[in-house]
Image (cartoon, rainbow, N blue to C red):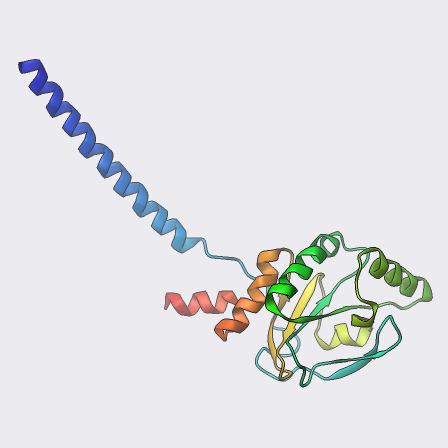
Length: 198
């Protein structure tokens, strides 16, 4: 009988200790959750500012038609700077298509090309990846306007022509963070999270 009482007491002590360990683990998970926040697109301070009208530009597309970037538009525009030699750009293209369908935005792909050989390379890149030639422009000045220095770089312009978000995008999370920042009315997710912590 005495052994039964001792075993019950030991079992209750073990149960209480396990409950305390679980509570401590739950607290640690909460602390880690606060420290590890979603990483959005890496926004740069250079170039046109978020919240200001995006520069309006009319450029010839690969299809030969004029394409207007900026200003009033029926939908938001995702301006994505890519290159045929950028491996991350190639892996990002299928993600771009699915994000644009869910966000109901239009895309403009942009790059630069100085020679006819480079232009042909872009045409081949567009054809091989099923990219719309009428939504693909080659312009060094456009990249300079937005001060793009690394690829892939994306700029989100709303239907009223206002620059809503921009940054280096290497994944679906980065790309979606541009739309999320726009929906929350902030320049970037980092700005939103910094405001939430204060």
